[in-house]
Image 1 (spheres, rainbow, N blue to C red):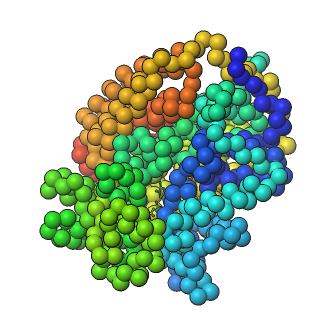
Image 2: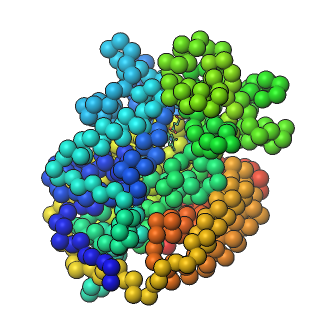
Image 3: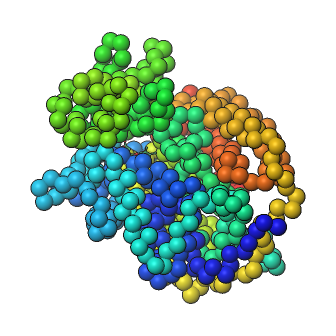
Length: 532
Ligand code: FAD
Ligand code: SIN
């Protein structure tokens, strides 16, 4: 058996994920506890490093928490939980202060932080580091974690499943979580990382769609692991599509930040140059994302276009270069000068609003299991996330989960001996092509049948394919040694199933879930909560 029980490593808490949520939790926990952080691939492979626009926080004297709360609820189409919205938004200024202390070089304007504007925000309230905020935040958090003697960072670990009561050497009958089984990507060994508490911070499931702005590893692993272990998952039908992803045949997932529209960018028909947003919403290009994405989708379908144009070339070139240096540079490399010409854009999946159901302490349904960040459904985003509220959610819930673990540490039992990973009945795969084929198929039908505009018939078609693929993938999983690709494929399919099942249960059009069969809004907002 190629497995080891890492029980003896002596870590108090295992954190899965090294993005904004995972590292925030790890840094707070490390004040008193020994923390192990596991990450698939590299330590900077999550969405956090890719974030562009910034972080929303009320920092301007003319703005108020009430404004930010109202904007968040309007974008979320009333599905948000007010208690969570207040909890997060009131903690935003402190979260920004902590990041400043960690050395994040936010842009300034005189003595204050510079605030940019994004869709759905009634005020300027987005703090940022040019147009590459995520990289600056990820770097500062990682630097602090690397310097902390209580934190061990282990990249190259693909977690497969949570260790629960049923993996205990003497089954206690409980759903208590005791850490994770993880594949060491370099050696191919599966290790059991056992701890008193576990925090999932594994990011979203965007890669379930053919076109997505999310990184390769956004395959819904944490959501699928928690679901298989018995935790409830909610609002998975609420998949956010960003209106403006670069349309380019070589570079398929480069985001053009919403801040381009925030600073005056206009959406236009690519042939006639007609500015079309006035026909869709009074807030024009700064309407919430679902509205702008649907407007672009409508233009593309109505006129048979491949893309629309996003144009900020009417602004002075120096202004454009100063505000968007990363995008400007990247586009120049592709032969597009955004200071003089429009950018071809299309909508693409961008953010997973649903996820593992958590409370205000980051607690899931399962004892010993916490979760934070994009893999969760905390009640903040409702039916549509307001721009730049998600990094904020990572910091607030990373802290909240850590605080709850620290506050109740004495009540967390020592882990029991757990069974090592059982590989006695598997062999090396002889048909890797199955993984590639199924991966492509899932992403295609999810894009075509479960995208921006849905129908019951299309959702049922997707469900039918999921059922067929499930048999094939589970059989493959039972017979062959795990690889990162196989782990991800299994989780992608699980995520697709949760999205489609949730979408079929919602008989209305609300926020990101828009279906031609139920175009109206029901009088009351209800979460779609799936119970394993
Ligand atoms: P991530 O940062 O995605 O990190 C996930 C971590 O989990 C990674 O370390 C990964 O390796 C690890 N992991 C996943 N699965 C496994 C596994 N099986 N085993 C081990 N480790 C695993 N939000 C904003 O608020 N403002 C923005 O400006 C903004 N811009 C964005 C731009 C882009 C292009 C994208 C894609 C997203 C943007 N977002 C933005 C959203 C935001 O970046 C994410 O919601 C947020 O960073 C998620 O952080 P996280 O810590 O939850 O997960
Ligand atoms: C962007 O910069 O447009 C992304 C902001 C976000 O996703 O919150």
